[in-house]
Length: 136
Image 1 (tube, rainbow, N blue to C red):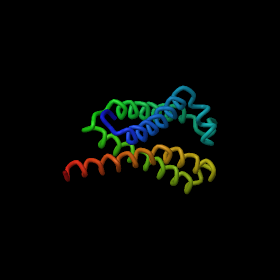
Image 2: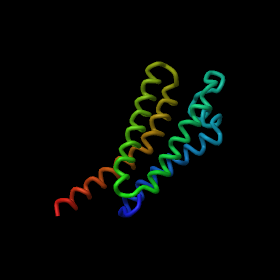
Image 3: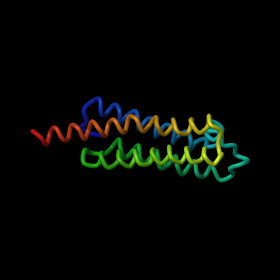
Image 4: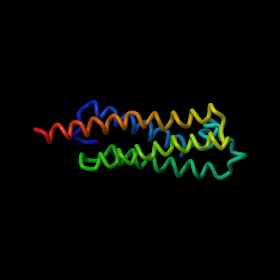
């Protein structure tokens, strides 16, 4: 994230706050997060472990993005986008299978979309700026 213009750094910072914040909550208190997402523990005994695995992944990814240089930021943002797109798709498929209520499905989708929007915008701005620099 180093050496980015302020608006790109802000977008990346928002994405990292969302990703790291939700990850930290999920790691510290997976049972509470499960309740918020509509996944009761009695039906999903292995979920606290899975939530902690997801949480660590997101926290490490946010830290990598924050400390990345300009050469690595594009690849890391692409990875974040791919992860969030698969999270949205997984939530959609869970809805089709009837695993969650419609409200819970939208909660899951919107959580991933909340990180997807700023990271996608940041990547687009970085790519645009990169192409403008190469044209000069």
